[in-house]
Length: 222
Picture 1 (cartoon, rainbow, N blue to C red):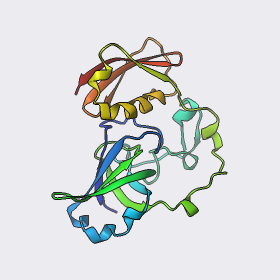
Picture 2 (cartoon, rainbow, N blue to C red; picture 1 turned 90 degrees about the horizontal axis):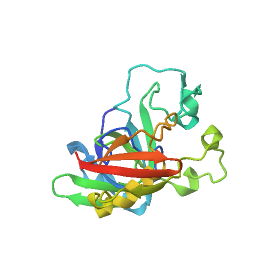
Picture 3 (cartoon, rainbow, N blue to C red; picture 1 turned 60 degrees about the vertical axis):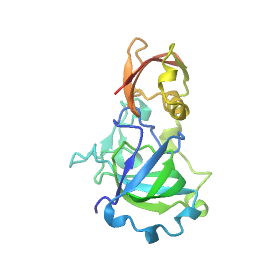
Picture 4 (tube, one colour; picture 1 turned 30 degrees about the horizontal axis):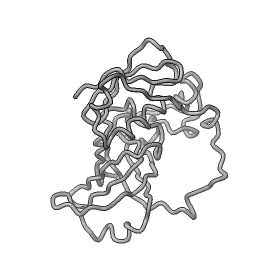
């Protein structure tokens, strides 16, 4: 297989990326390689509200795998079978994300560009394929979530120190707050005195977590 496209997102590093797709409204762009910039290849896609993105865990591809992994959801201390998790450390480093298709833009330089929201994918990640999401076949409302639902994901109140909120573009604030409210820290770290820094868009976001409140302490340009 080879990459058909690359995604442009607000996450230049792994730390801080939403743990699953669909948890934020941040918009990303999918830019196709020249040989796939053919309008006819996208005919009919505009009729779908959501799509599946198949992509490569390119930054986590070790060339080897382990039958068990430590899911962050369980605090990083409990081992589960790799096929019972969405760990990037797999026999084949392939991932899948369901995202909302906001629009298809016919760009003069890049041909058809897909604008999607809710992607949990690092910037410049290779995309292997695009498939339409089919509500009648792909949705199972009564499905069991296994150990992934044993603990609620972070639901923090996000507050900004004086002057920091204004340093984030207004169009990006809601998405950033959604990311931070889910607690981007590793599940096994809960030091209230520690300052964490994550890259977001063109900024470096520094924050602390005290009980159920995440405090943005500084915002700097990268």
